Image (cartoon, rainbow, N blue to C red; front, side, top):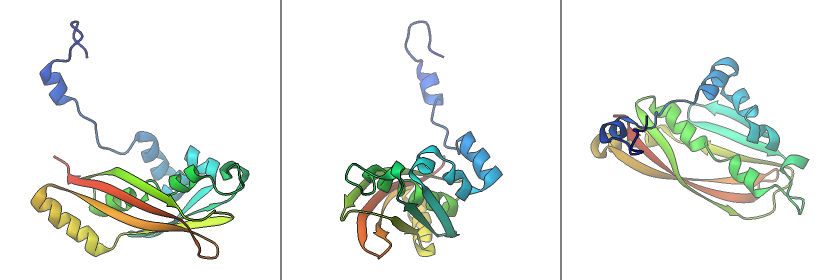
Length: 174
């Protein structure tokens, strides 16, 4: 509540913070349909024909078949769709593996388009158990850390279409 003066009182400002919880729509979709189907019905992924396949707790694959909805002006995969198919998945793997006591945020991203993507493209995300343990140890000592991950989007022949770099911020909840 904003006081009549138009300024926020300090105690109100201190008590207001972003709740770090699963957004209710996602929670409902995940609990009702499962995470794979929740993603398939997420607007940007549905429109771009992005599909996910959870392999195990530490890895998943994402693929996108070229359609009119994800094709750019020159007939290749739209760059925004290529990035979008990579956006949240390192964060998801870390959240799943670290648990509810940790906060994980995407901090930065970089995508390099290497060659034109056509047809079906895919990308694999993997974080080994040793990395999860190392994060726990670092955060226990330093309270927070940032980690950088790399992966590649490839076409059906295994040719690299794009290279992705993601930096994530991780800390324990207070």
